[in-house]
Image (spheres, one colour):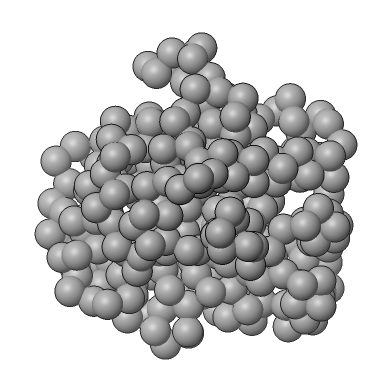
Length: 286
């Protein structure tokens, strides 16, 4: 972890940031460690490819630990919140598979985004909480915490408030939320709402920035930019996270094709430096 006075958070690289370069996962791990990150956030498809190529996930977990990194979260997709019972049963089996992958590689968490319900209006969030509670119970069997993610473009579970309600409604102490700068902006979540979140409520925080153009109505994930290169109120965000007691990871998650054409190691270093500088500015004199 970083210096608590000026850098109270840990720093993580979501591998989407360098995914477009077509690197093997072991190379992404090396780049992450060499850049100076504390953790890595890979995707299920990368672990599947690693296994398909003959690799052992236990060995991969050891490689990551030897590099001085933790696996903070694993990104996978399964329709855990849908109404259709059969489809949801299939999704829960995929969730179990993903959790087993996470367990083998030493991941602490598994993302649970609103996959399958992004176009559903009027989703019953109380019922969604029951389904998230089921997911948490499965996670407890594997020692992996499903972290509830909201997507700003989703018609359901598109705001921080939606996700916090679902997490609270489970009544479970292990319920937690994954927040993201871009998704808060896209979904219309007031950034000031972060002041109301306790440190245990937020399982992980995705960091990025967004430009003024394209405008809010048409901006997409691909338009994310390095922290400080856009108009997001990052200094206020980091101050509020700090004041709320959050001391977890800030994970850089970008999908910018221009960055994918750059050297992956340079992209990783630039992103880390940008996050650290934004935090330093936010907390200077605080």
